[in-house]
Length: 166
Image 1: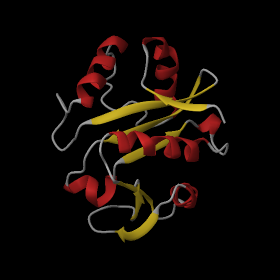
Image 2 (image 1 turned 60 degrees about the horizontal axis):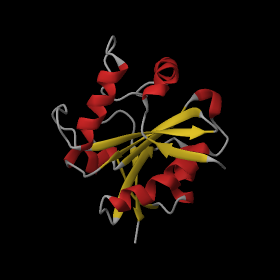
Image 3 (image 1 turned 90 degrees about the vertical axis):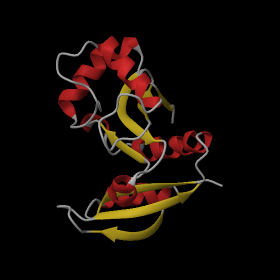
Image 4 (image 1 turned 90 degrees about the horizontal axis):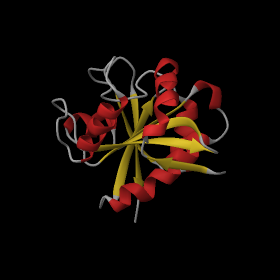
């Protein structure tokens, strides 16, 4: 599979705007009407943990590119705060509806693990909704070891998995 994870580039603007309409939370920190150049600057600052909303940590946003087509996005949080340790985890991913069921999510998570290691992480937490069997299989295929499920103060219980990077 020729999937690569890469940062958004100025040439991705049209695909990015289209993806916003297809998938909720495709563009973290994007605000309606924001210029794409300004959005890329926001993402650059997010890498350093600057200018983030309360409760957010330094993070990287990648798009999954297959043959020059954006098929999804992945966020990699550089550290965990209490909320992320409970339900959010280090890595979140999503595949655009037209590209689902092609193995892209598994490839995205697999490709993200060395990137997490480059940040100095030795293990990563990945979570999914309790009833999301597809995501469970993806996480387990990438080495995820189930720790527990979290149910307090949330609408949908979350399964918590750790993936060892060493």
